[in-house]
Image (cartoon, rainbow, N blue to C red; front, side):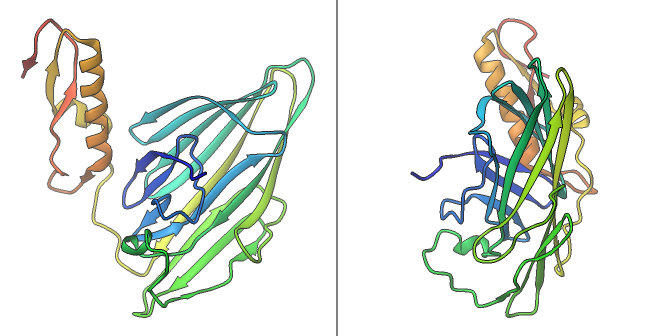
Length: 263
């Protein structure tokens, strides 16, 4: 069964599209992946615990990414994904049990470097050259050169003993021992590069966005929540240029009194 896409996160020049549980099951013709310079830099990305499937408890969209919470037996896991000009995938594992436990997971990652406009096609039409993935310790690199000479690369950094490359996605295993009542962390970073110029944008500021946006309020909590989420969606879709945000900021939610207001 094809996984339903539910998580779309945008940073500065980079977009993450995955399932509700933040998996990129691919290569997918439905658009899952990590994109930069109109190219899919990551076509498959999954972190699969060897002790069984993760149970997703909650997923929250944040101005700079997402926060997901899972349970796995006695382990409680928080996963913080930050998307700016790189992707930081931070796992925090807490052991609520009376004895030590090990969190062990296999990472599978691949990059097909498909053009944005041919992702949904059955057959690839571009004729660039994709190099075999190169692994060096914790570092894994995918490289691609288009027929016009543009070079793209994707680098993955993870605390694995060694990456295994060959046919299909590259694979590595991470493991941490967690004492009772303790918390340990794992971080996986994804960095994208291109010989094309990077977009000229400034850092995005959620607090500044809220302070300078139009305010709406109503006597309906559901409507206020919808407005607040819409403002967050617009913020994530916008880029901050030296002149202003693009598209321009519009509004944010603010429940203050009965009836719709505008200021």
